Length: 127
Image (cartoon, rainbow, N blue to C red; front, side, top):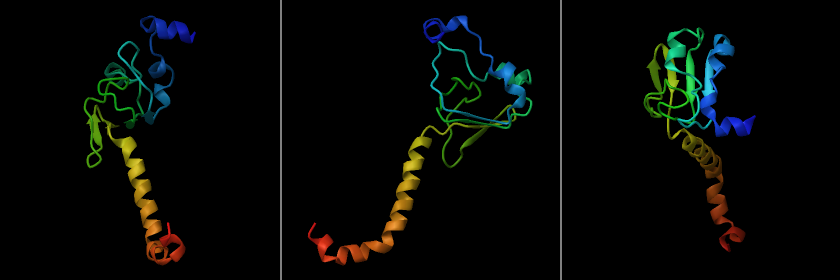
């Protein structure tokens, strides 16, 4: 019951590590988390080897010490990974802004060959 869970999250225990952990190589987390709710991945779960195949966690939400407890600090585009308990953890807090930057660069690269002819066009010049 969603209402019950949101109203009383302290009554719930996470089951991700027990039910899915043994199958996971990579985790990509993008969910919102706050301290009232159970963590998705805890240090204790890693130390107890509940994720024996886990190699990489990409925490796109970048909640330091949050839902992915292994994310202990933010990382940068230049140095995007931390090694925590032999798990490569990505936590770039500005990662969402990188996609528009790359898209803008690509659009500019594609547009540049046409700029001179567009600027010389009298119809365009009237604009």
